Structure formats: structure tokens, C-alpha cells
Amino acid sequence: MHYTDILDVNKKNVQNARKYSLAIIDKDMTAAEVIRALHEQRITVEAEEYFYTLQQIGEEAEDEEPVIDAFPALFKAFEAHIAPEPPRKFSADHPLRLYRSENEAMYDFFDDGVHMLRYDYDAEAWQTYAKKAQTYKMHLHRKQNQLYPHLSDKGISGPLRIFWSYDDDVKNALTEFEKAAKDGNQLAVQSAFYAVYDATAFLMRAEEKLLYPSAFKLLTLNEFIMMEVGDEEIGYAFIEPPAHNQAERQMMRGLDFLMLHHDGSDLSGDTIINLATGRMSLMHLNLMLSHLPFDLTFIDENNLVRYYNARANRLFPRSTGVIGRDVKNCHPRESLTKVQALIDDLRTGQRPYADFWFRRDDKMILIRYIAVRDKADVFRGIVEVAMDIAPFAAIEGEQRLLPES
Image (tube, rainbow, N blue to C red; front, top):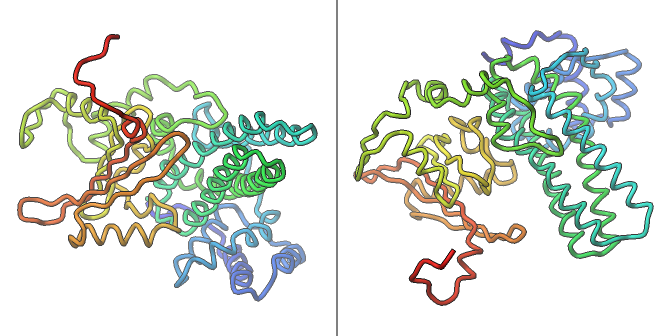
């Protein structure tokens, strides 16, 4: 169902939210002036009504960048005028409960950091703290790979681009914080800590006040149950994995369910697949692909994500929520132009493949994008391969025999 068929919004509330939001975006009013006007007129909106408003504004905008850039001012103006979410009881493994639990844990983690600032600077302690802070990226990965795709299915786009942008601000701040801690300059570390604190606290408030209540109204219980499997695949930030209903989890993890959900087929693990150079069961095919020593993703000719190998310790977390999504919805807005240029080059044959490499901690990551063409040279999609090549770069000499264990 489309979001317009799901959300029951008060038209007057949406009109008011739209009027004052556009005034901020167009710089006709400041956030402070809008706050005063909302207070004087006693205007209050529900979370999903403001979410609806942001979506409508995004749909009508020729360029969404001004909307995204104005979001801190928009949220500042409306935060106190978004009605509180009514108390709700969630199961222990409900995705929205877990997101909130992670945010609570992150606030406690920040309290530890503020406590550390009161004592003499300890470079080693800050390195450990900054490294642990990176765990929060799991929270962001889950949102982008799980929650956002389901909301996208409802026709939501504008608010997701907004949240994705500020997710990436937090990711970047976390990365810079870890770099500063490794360099060991006290003032730089403290500055980076406050940058992380400010960016993350803002995002968490926006999640709690706007994103989660709207998601609750837009998604069904079955959709949240589907998310639980992918959530577990990606992992959690600062909290222990929840205990799941085993029967429910088995059903959602089942190969039959995944096949039915994505392809409409009823293949079982024993089904024999005829390949160009061999035959094997679907079970063996899945096992083989999941044991490859690299991340593998396939995007079809329509730019839809069709497959990823669910190997242990993936370099880039994925979940079943990305299957069937436009690949452009799997990247931050800042990189969309480059992503489209790469797809166009591979599609037109401008280049048969493209390589990228960069360092991440002790890893040297190589990513190769390969154009896939059939015998008639028709473009059929793109294979993405990502691998840590650091162990191979360190190889010297030869090894022709199996070393002793």
C-alpha cells in the first residue's frame, strides 16, 4: 500500500506544517520565528503528519538539497510541536524497540566519555573509547538496509534521503573521531568527541520523535517480523542480540520463505540447478557462494539488487531487505552522481570493469565492478566483488606445499 492510503492525516495540520516548513526552507522565516508562531497559534502535529509533510515537500521540490540542508532548522522549529507518541508495548525483539535500546545505550556511552573529560588525558583510553564508538555504525547500517527499504516500498523517499544524509554525518564524525584518537592530540580528540556527540544526539532525537513513530504507523507487524532476520544478520550496537521466537525465526529464515517472498518460486534446497558448466543442488550452490573469500553482489540490468552472498564477516553489511531495491537507494546522496556515472559506463561498454581501493583500519579493501553481458553482448547487470587484499599484499616468496598444522 502507498503511504497516502495508510496515513490518516489531518489536512489542516499538514497545511500548517507545510506552510511554516516552506517558510524556513525558502528563508522567509527563521526557526525561532516559526517556533513563536506555532506557540502563539497552539499548532501541534502528529509525527506521521510531519513525516507526510516532508514527503510531500520532497516530491514537489525540483531540488531536494535545500530541504535536506534545512532539516536541522525544521526539526528545531517543530520538535516541541510534534505530539508525544502514545505508550506502546513492543516485544523484546521488535526492531523499533531495539533501535531505541541502542540509542539509550549510546547516551550512556556518551556519559562515559563526558566523565573521561574530567580527568587527565589518557591517549590509550581514548583510543579504546573511540574504537568502541564505531559500533554505533551497526545501528545506522540496519536502518539503511532494513528499515528504509520497507518504508521505500510505501512510496516514502524524501524523509529517507534526509535521514540517510544525517546518518552519514554521524558515520563520518565517528571515523574522524577514531582517526583523531589514533593521532593522540588531546584538543583534536576532545573536539572530535563533541562533533560525534552533537551529530549523534541530533540524529537520535529526530529518530525518536519523527522516524520511529512514523515507521510504526506505516509498516505492518509482518513487515517488522521480516526485518528481524536481516537485523540479526547485520548485528546490533551496544546491546545484546535479542531472544527470538524460534518458530517464527525459523519460518523467516527458511529458504522456501525467501524464495517465495522474492521470486515467487517454490524451489527447495534439494532442487538441482543446471548451470553452464555443471549441476548442483540449490543447497550446495548457496553454500559455495557463502564460502567465497569475498563479498559478492549482483545488480540486474534494471539497477535492482538481486543477490548478495551471506558470508561470515562481510566487509559491507547486507540484509535481505535490500533484495529487489534500486541500487541508487543503497547509497548516500553525496555519491549518487558517481554511482550513476559508473553504471552508465558499464552499461554502455565505456569500460568493462572499474576498480576502487582504500584502507579501513588494518584492511586494504579492493572493490571491482564488472559489467555482465550475454552471448549477444546485451548488458545484463553488474557484479560487485569486494575483498580485503592486505593478506595477499604481504605475500613474499613461494609456497607450493601445504604447511604443517
